[in-house]
Length: 289
Image (tube, rainbow, N blue to C red; front, side, top):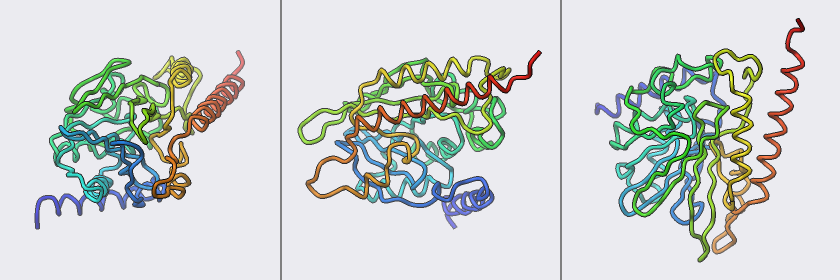
């Protein structure tokens, strides 16, 4: 039995142990597909991973679960690209459903792993995070080699492609929204890959000793998101941008269904209102002195 086959058996066994925590869609395959230009979807039905291809190798955004990596590799190869050509690995944020597979991706490809500065500690040690245990990063699956760090905003360049990292904190301290340009039908479009503006169940927005400025960080995130020009709206989960519904509308030689600036604006506005509602509720629930 090969080393990879043995590793795969162990991975699938671990994935089975997490079935009670993972939505089924996280491990359900989804057809890989082109979004625009050199931007492709290679994730599962519920966990988004993106492949940005270049002549000098490829960039992968989100390794997802460790059990997701064989699926991501298969999707990459089905599109006609070599998984071993992934040179840079990025993530949207340091929650294990988006980065638990990073160590395996690095092992299989030798990719350089680049993480926002504020999420490095969580990436390296899952105990250092002020969120409920089930949302913690890594589940001890990561190596302690995070690679390069970015502070607030930085650029990742490979083969003529430029990805810009925007710090959009709150969901995690280093939650990252990625932007780039993509060409489709002879036109250039602004692509925005949202990290996450969600306030998950159990998040403490008021009097959070482990993350005192969490509410201010969320407010910053919405200012950043509203400032970004967006034509093609993507995100860490396909449900953010209606991935399944849009994929179903793809037609040969038809319009690009992923061009959706109005959908982006509506999504950001709705998520901001959800955050403000949660903040107001938690403020009203504070014990009175």
